[in-house]
Image (cartoon, rainbow, N blue to C red; front, top):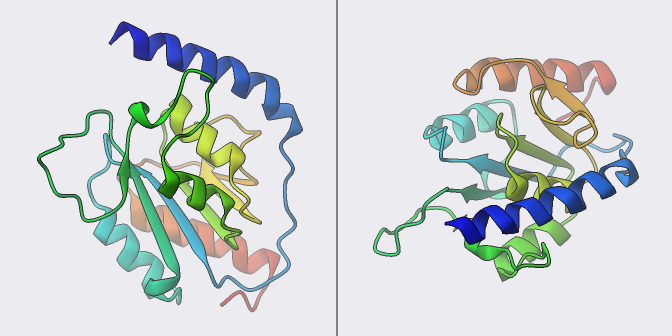
Length: 174
């Protein structure tokens, strides 16, 4: 447990150093692919969130989900790719291949669905090659292009506000 605190300390130090270098992409294309990064430690309604995104016109097969959990039970079968702090080495590098692939994929939109700053989640958001990043207002403002000020449990409000904003940027978004 203590070793995880040290690992998180080094990741936060690296994040703070590199947050000023984050490039905010320009939103120029329609949304075809969506990356969804969820902290399941605090939010368990990922199916409802997915349904809300689909109802706005996003094709479900074009949404790639990865889920973070504080504690992973090896005996439990997860429906989505799930990761934890153990998938991070001492240098602050991600060791899990599914996370490396998620980061490298150039999503049209990355939704960082977490409202508590956790080093692992922030590292993935920061390193993602997504063209446009969206998250909660309670997270460091330098990580996301758009910050939505709502409660984590109000996924319908989050999705409605997101698409309202995106339609103001580009009217024929989907």
